[in-house]
Image (tube, rainbow, N blue to C red):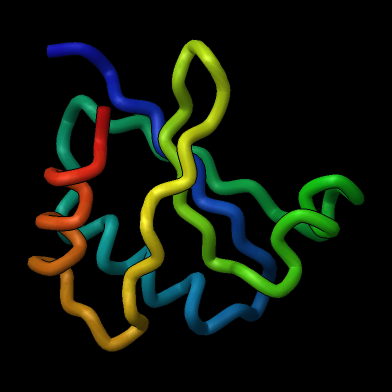
Length: 88
């Protein structure tokens, strides 16, 4: 099975980011690679995502595909369905 590369744009002390990361860890698949990007480490990331985090993307050969935003109240099962429906 091919590797699926996911990127989580986050920042330190972001409770929404921590919650999404916990859910991702619960449903993590062996073929997934997860890269966590701290938006405070690069100005372009900060400018793009400062009001949007957490932002989950799939890394593709053509760039990054931003995945639909999930409600912070959603559970891991709902996240798994969202990913199943949206990963390329």
